[in-house]
Amino acid sequence: MRAVNDDLMDTNMNCIMRNIRLPFWAGLLAITMFLHATAQAAAAPSAFVTELTNNAFAALRAKDISEAERFSRFRELLSEGVDLQRVGRFVLGPNWRRANPEQQAEYQALFSDYVIAAYAGRLKDYTESKYTISKTLRTGENEYIVKTLFVHPKNPEPVHVDWRLREEGEALKVIDLTIEGISMALTQRSEFSAIIQQNNGDIGALIERLRNISADINAGKEVTVSQ
Image (cartoon, rainbow, N blue to C red):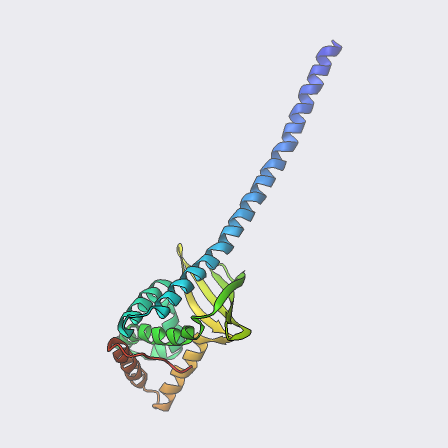
């Protein structure tokens, strides 16, 4: 009889231990999966910036190609890696609502060439630099900042470049580039607003300027945009 009771006690203890172990292992598994997912989420923006930077530098460093071909390669990269529609609307600011549909459509088409000139002009200064990714921050449900440091062989002081990314579906897109604390999107917004104000609120004056930049790019001219 005692043997039967002992067997029952052992069975009960085994059940209790299993009940204790199951939540423990389930919790441990959940924590492991969370940490793995977090690590993957942090790695994806870093990998995106690394690939985009390497490809951009390769296009800007390429020798024995025309400026038209260089801009063509750069345009393809930016079209894939930058949310040009979102950035374009932000840069135009309140003037976007003032523009008629025809102006909005032409502005967005020309804005991509403007961004090519602006980004190419700025990034060209760093093509001989070595860069490292120092930190990746999640700033919102779908947004990240990837902090990078660029060191030029002739200048030991690193240049801080922050890439602001937004997740659209399963794709990451650049929505701003901040160099030493200066946002390119905000700088461009201020510049565009000044051009419109200087022309008595005429959005057409800004579009005409963008047409000229686009024409120079398509003619194969080396174009830079002052910031």
